[in-house]
Length: 529
Image 1 (cartoon, rainbow, N blue to C red):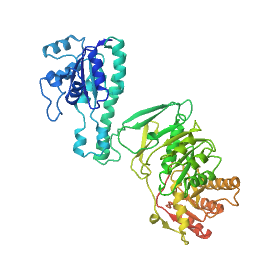
Image 2 (image 1 turned 90 degrees about the vertical axis):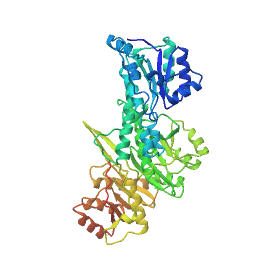
Image 3 (image 1 turned 45 degrees about the vertical axis):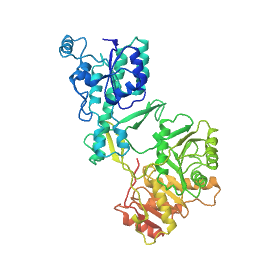
Image 4 (image 1 turned 90 degrees about the horizontal axis):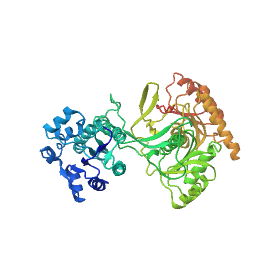
């Protein structure tokens, strides 16, 4: 059966937006409206004639509305195959009327969780009758149209207008596909809440992740790769996916990836002190904290003026005009901040291709959660790297104690190293990175590259010496040999922060003592592959 005339519709929705207009359109086509509870009341308030579901079933809605549509006269009307003689005979024998259209959206489970409702209320917002009707109608899409999203009301009305109150099989197929995706996502939300929030599991035996496509992207990492952005349907931390894009071109796959790296790092810094992060290819190339946003940006930029070109800039404070003007002096792909004043917005508006993202309050960097990586034939999940180190967590392992300034620089460098691809080496001095070595196959090369970058920055900045002189150096994992440490000594570092835990720790500590370094162990590693 290709074309189906809509003569009877069942409507039962939690989201009443667009309901009156839809009901009026159906009534214009002579469709009988059957409805439940609040939906029926809303339709009547719009001046529409409505038949109560209890009149169809012969049973009242009962048990606080838990039982109202779970009845053969509802599901028989949805599931009957209209060109099957036995089905038609059963409908006639039991006085079951056909239902040609179902309009259902489900109890707001995710919204109930998001507003912090207690457990009994959350349980009551698990819809039973709604998903049952959706699945029955979607299964029988050869004869029944199922609409689960108010965004589709307009298309439904347009189809009825153009096809004299009928729906096509292709249209019903598309609606059915969307309906099954909706119930699958709904069940995934419930399963996720039970597993993580209710039962406190980290890695449940079966993991459901309900996500919704937010936008298609122009392409992936490379032009021959397709890509899309999805966001969770369950409550969670706001991030780049939820940021408001105030201006600029559409974000690409790489923009999203780099912007996420920048936001994750800048959110580590207390907003009491302005901080700036500049990221290129998902690695920070300059990071600084200072007394003002403009000073933080200038210090971060000075760390690597070459890599900053075409990079991602993130700040932990609202943007002002002076900082905006400095950022727009060079080509920048994306700027991220909690907010921006009117002057700053006006300055950025002069760079029409620059993307300006406003995030509002940052998510807690210590929040729990999972990260995912695909591998051939499977998925790898792990807890977020939300480990943080404070001064009291450090163990001094050298004869020389670090000074207060060295400790501050150690912790700053350690914070940055956590967000640098391994092997990671970060030199820092006075609240600013001096050199960053990332993604090398051995730690010695990372240390050497970071030192070279510091020398290059000094040359470009016209400084008398590289900022690695008198700096602290952080290593994301232990030094397996003393050679990497010696490279840091040659660069001028006076303090070291590293996890420790190598079988050669004694050798490395002895080399540090011989060089007059202060070294602290964190007992925590921060690999990032």
